[in-house]
Every structure is written in C-alpha cells, then in structure tokens.
Length: 281
Image (cartoon, rainbow, N blue to C red; front, top):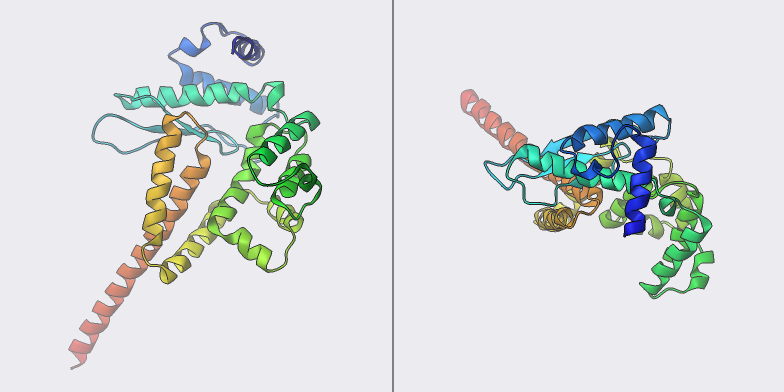
C-alpha cells in the first residue's frame, strides 16, 4: 500500500506538477483537479478514442443522503461511496474516487503486457472450470478473453474496459448467445464489435431486445431493473467502477419508457377513434 501511494504521488508530480502530492487527496478542490488531469491528458493526446469531457450527474433527491456520479472520457463511471449530506459533498466525493482511479490507471501495473495477460488468464482459470490450454482455443471463454487481451496489448485497463463493456452488455442481453447459435465464431464476434463503441444507437437496439423479452415474459424488465438498481447501489458504496450497472439501468429504463409511450399513444389513438365514430353516428 505504501509503495502504491508513493507511485500515485510520483504520478501526481508528473501530471500535476504545481500540486503538493502529499496533500492532493485532502484538497477540497478535487473537482478542479480531476478536470485538470484529463485536460492535461488531452493536451498530451493520450485520451481515449471516444474522448470527451468529465461529466457529473446528481440523482434527484428531496434530502440527504445525496448521490453523484462522474463519467470520465472513455465512459468509465464512478460515484460517491460515502454518505453525503449535500450535493456538493457528493460531487467532491465522486470526483475523489474518479481521480484516484485515474491516477492508479497510469501505473505500469495497469498496462496490458504479456506478464499481465498471463496473470489474468491464470486468475480466470482458477475462478472457472477451464484450463490453461483453453487460452489457445478461441472457441472457449478463456480463449476469447486471451484473444481480447492480446488484441489490446499496451492499453491501460480503463481503455480495455471501454471495449469490455460492450461485450458485458451483449452477454447480459443474450445477444452473444444468439450470435453463437448462428455459428459465428467468438473471434468473428469480437472482431466485429471491437469496431464499435457504446452509443445511443446500440443502447436503443438493446432496449428493443428487452421490449421483445417483455412481450414474451411480462414483468421481466421491471425485475431486471430492480436487480440493476441494487447492483449499482452496492457497487457505488464499495467504490467500484459503475458503468456496467449504470448502462443496464439506462437501457432498461429506456425500454420501459418506450413501452409506456406506446401504451399512451395507443390509448390516445383508441380514444380519438371513439370520438370520431361518435361524431359520425
């Protein structure tokens, strides 16, 4: 832990040279520091392909505790994990979590290297029923993971997560299973979706998938939304990266709003038809 803190302080001295590295995490203006960090990365042209700005979002709440999220360039999302009595405090706490993760992402140990890939594959094998030999077989989950890691050699983990979020959502959505049933190889699926980032178009397609699921199993969207909200809350309080859970919430909410909008439109059309028929008679 001491060595990690020293490494973080060294990084602070490199990317924020006019800041006191020993006091950086006690600085109340952590919001400005996070913005400054990413502006410096943009100047160095070391930002994500889907570069953007640091974006804050506060949940509507009549009173404490308040919740704030911050989304970084590339899409990684963090939130306040402490119980905050004001919106400003929640925003600062979210910014602090995001800044620590942004700095930690700059450490050499967060770069995808051959050593990192070997360790990751060994961890994956120990947590599944797979074997090390599966790493050379792209038709297995371990092999697909190995292929994705090797395809992103040299990138940081936050950059890798930007790609992984698409596959996490496709797996959750059931789309990966459907693609496998069409005899598409894992490598083909990975190569295809690696070209795309998560945008409004992809979210809309996933929302449509859930609307179709709702027609087959009424109530499934509400059930999944409750699970997503619970996961998001637990992950936020644990100080974890939140994008997967937040994207699930957004996609399911979009699906519900579309269903509600269609019902209102249908009801309005029926009412209008009734009035027209009454007038005719």
